[in-house]
Amino acid sequence: MANPPQWLGMKYPDSDLVGLLYRYARPVRDTRMTALDVGCGSGRHLAVLRDLGYQAIGIDNDPVAVDNAEHNGLDAVLGDASAYNPPIPPDLVVGWGFTMIVPCAQDILTGWSPGLVILDWRSRNNTWAHYVDNEWLSDGRVRIVKEGHILNGLVYRLSTPDECEIPGYERIRFQTVTKQDGVECNEWYQTVHRRLNGTAN
Image (cartoon, rainbow, N blue to C red; front, side, top):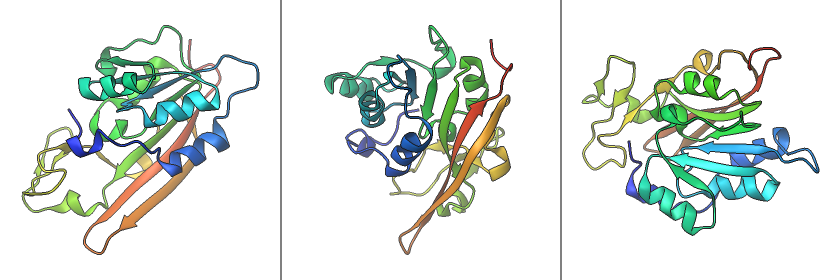
């Protein structure tokens, strides 16, 4: 599923993610640590990972986004995350927006076996989750139906705090971010997960 065209030009990294990276995921000095940005878009977070010292690669299923990332001098591959196999388990996976659009996100992440994972999740408290014409799908996701809205026609997965977990991982950080503009409330959960010993190959 492609993101709204307005998002393709996003150049600035999310400040919340930058803070989590600096607190939990700064690479060990003089090591070659790998990072995967799943749903990398045009590379706004890939650049941060690279500047932190990671050997970073992004994956996205939007060809325009991947072209933009490559134009920005970043390494990105075009493809579906469910079919992607990293050559080695990455030290870090960042998925900013990934859990919101991929129903099996946790299964994919578990299969990649990263050491650390940083994610955000859409809360069920978002105003747009409750539009009367929305279509709720059998897998629990919602197709947003509101003419003229930036998300009209898109399908999103919404989560409760208890659902923001990855099998075989310890959740070491959980925070809620709420933004309200007087008309709509948007709420995200942001999490950091560390692989438990003995859970991965």
